[in-house]
Amino acid sequence: MKNTLDKIFRLKELSTDVPTEIIAGAVTFMTMAYIIFVNPAILSAAGIPKDALIIATCLAAGFTTVLMGVATNYPFALAPGMGLNAFITYGVVIAMKLPWQVAMDLVFFEGAIICILVVTRVREWIMNAIPLNMKRAIGVGIGLFIAFIGLQSAGLVVKSDATMVTFGSFGAPALLSSFGLLFTALLMSRHVKGSILIGIAVTAAAASVTGVARLPKAVVALPAASHFTTLLAPLSPAFLSQAFKAGLVSVVFALILSDFFDTMGTVVAVGGKAGFLDKSGKLPRLRGVLLVDGFAAMVGGAFGCSSVTCYIESASGVSEGGRSGLTSIVTGVLFFLSIIFWPVIAAVPAAATAPALIIVGFLMIGIVREIIWDDITEAFPSFLTILTIPLTFSISRGIGCGFIAYVVIKACTGKWREVHPAMYIIAVLFAVDFALSKN
Image 1: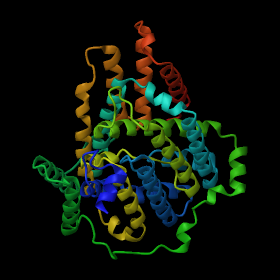
Image 2: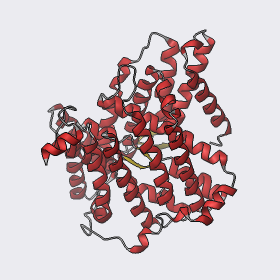
Image 3: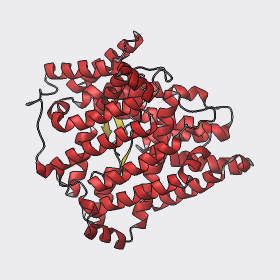
């Protein structure tokens, strides 16, 4: 069995092994399992049954992540995207007073259009047009973004009316996260295999002992038939016709732009961390990754759980040594299993997974040293990208700010020929999107 897996996933060639891939897949799952609870919490405000959303989220994440592993042999995991789910709930369903099924049909259409862009090589053409320094900056910005999310989850950074954010108080969750962070860092300094996963497990156990988290009431719980009501419900002819008649071109465009560049940032950042990118910063076999990602958006719409996309938390598994599609398959299987083991997963508090996010962010910013800092036409757009991704709390918005700055500075300093034609098009599209944005 071990030899078979080695041949299928080219483990020796990728300098990894089965135990490492299993640990990496488990770490990726643990750092993104929060989506099982957060996604339903957000989308239920749109009128979608919360219990059904839990099942739909697990199924969509599990299916698309396994598909990514099988089809591409990359350790990328997928799940309903944060930000997009809030946009669907508050920007489409509530603000435009549309049925949630119609909103999900728009997500389905967005995924179909992205698949067409992949098949016609337009999406790959755009991704390969991004300058290497900008790709590095995206990875650093996302690393800071992940660490920022971890600090918030830990309660170490909190909202402030005066300064927007400020230092939190050292209550029990913050103390627990601080313990987990230092414990994980200590394990890593000792080169302990699976240190991030061990850190999560030990911190979760400490949370139960100290009363920060409650022990699960049951180990397993089977879903009821009513939990599957969202699956394929949006694809009803009645709702599809409403989506076509609604003339919601701007909504689909906004979804495409956000999904398109969120995925680009994630693939570049995780691919760079894993050492997959070539000398020009391109990811081999990129087309397959993008096609699965576009199809995943269609799955999310059809399942009624919002657009499914590549998750930056995949970097946690890569940090544990995951290098093949076997990592993704392990993560996907755990999503499937979580359907019945959700009581146990629910018992793992944010305070236990927050240290893992901070550690991953730390590991991702190392590439900042490779950015060319002595050329301001390269350095300033890179800096702006790094700065705005975490501060706008949006990968795509941060990328947009950097791209616009890159094009304008290059053009105004007589270096317009250094800019790929696709970059001009992208910058204009981002500028239009920013102008039309209401927030």
